[in-house]
Amino acid sequence: MILITGKNGQLAREFVKKLTEKNINFKALGHEELDIGNLDSVMKTVRELKPTTIINCAAYNLVDKAEEEYEIAYKTNTIGPENLAIAAREIGGFLIHYSTDYVFDGTKENGLYIENDTPSPVNEYGKTKLEGEKRIKEIGDKYLIFRVSWVYGKGKQNFMYKLTQWAEKMPFLKVVCDEFSVPTSTETIVNISLKALKEELTGLYHLVNSGYTSRFEWARLTFKLLKLNKFIRPVTSDTFKLPAKRPGFSPMSNERLSKLLNIQIPAWEDALEKFLKEEGLTL
Image 1 (cartoon, rainbow, N blue to C red):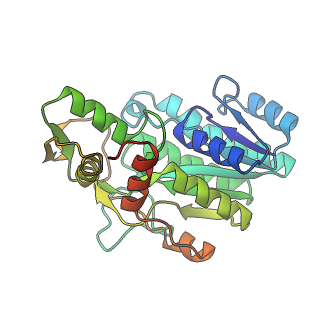
Image 2 (spheres, rainbow, N blue to C red):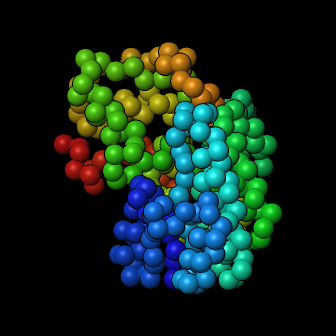
């Protein structure tokens, strides 16, 4: 049996869809049912359900708010994974956890970030996620930590939905052109996660779609695929004066994971087009 945390998020919803299709037994719980930051609650739930695998989709990912709500972010992103790792170890279960490209500072100049690169987060959100990784590693060896980036899936939590909302309200859009990473679909994350679990991989990997882009180019391709004729002006990130600093260039390489699983992970452009078609958004 698989236990999924953070059931209301877009990643958990994709897991629910996929596991239901595959007729795999699972239990998905939201924050109101399971506060992963509370060890007693986690232990009680895990002892009752005795899952073979825990998939942690719960996260505090409000990057700017984390600057002022550090304790809340820390409880979910650091203490939460630690608690789940402790519980998984007690019952001999396996833990899958998701981290972020924001563990890096974005200053690498000679290629994409690989798993051996030294993390150096530039914001509080990234710091809590990196510490969560460390706690899991310290507790046991039956885990998969996947660093993901610019995640999008069904629902209203993703960049494309926000773009279309902005497009309806504004005569033109301003989108940053100096932040680079890899838009990654929840479908890709779920498919690769389940394959890695089946192949009994352990350790830390970068799980992203292939290639990389800027937020500006991501927005341009989205509007092109949606056939939305709206002007998008490229601007620098300091235009918006956001509380949290972002890494300028944080795309990660999925080469290690691709080789181990002997697969080709779809390009970000192809995954985006597939997602928009399945959502019925392209003409």
